[in-house]
Image: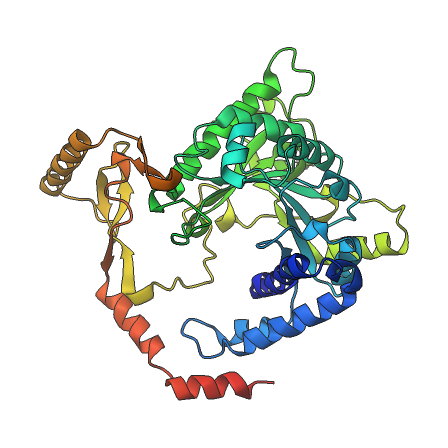
Length: 449
């Protein structure tokens, strides 16, 4: 399975659509889905060939990346607007390429008629009509109603569905109940929460670095959302309660956390009994001496088999539980790996590592980058520095900047994000960087066929 196949394919497909639509509206109806798939793969392979010899690129991964296994239809534009999107998706499935389709929820009719995809995402960028208008600047006046109708239709889809929430500090990071209501409306398989990535200043965005949350802040937001969803589930008189969700996975490097439905993705191992897809209640949450196993991963071969059956007979139906796969322990929430595959080696650019590894509730560091506990004298100095900062900036203060910019001042983040250079790691990276000359790298990139 080639994760390197995700971005280049999706960039070619969707970006080309968006640019062509602006200049030539008939592009959508004239371009054949098979042509898009064929040319996207061709472009992807060309880009991968050029990556050979780049520091950090492993030879076996580079070779495997020539075979595309996954495609994310997202990033730029709205892929679901393509009127032949179903043919495009089926064309990818025929080539054993899984599909991750991301929509902004503004085209509910297209969602309703969509063929099965491996995983369907709806971007839930804001929890209220006002914040949706401010953050997304939608084209449609009825954008809020379109989003809600899309979520209502998503819950009828049989395959895996995801509400994707991008957390933007100072903009949408304190409106838990609104998000919970939207998740409850869609009753999605997963809720994926990710901190916004600051990509630099531009005329198209008024975000700044302070709007990007740290991983621990995304975790805190996720837990608040989980508890609010639980409250809705057990609220007396609620005519349409959402299912129970639990924190299943995290990936610290991506600053992302995953909530998953217990009734779809959690198996209880109690002796030899195995339970999947049952109704989970408060007794389940309080049950002791039970080993819980998450099954959030995908059996891609099984999905391909099921998709082929649907292609042959569109009355054939299949659902989320039909292509589950166990989640490896290192990917589960609470594991020390924090989402990093232990078979991979982390590559620290220029040997830079976080200066501190652990912090107390006030944000004061307790351990250095090697995991060694800080001495009382060092801690005292950091506490004094924090006290001076707090005296100058109110905790969590939001400062309104020029052009609608919002700057967040949070004392708890004072010592996070500071990095130091580890000499041993730097020496190791330098050796990797100097293995091949630039000429050798270019020659190697052209030599593989």
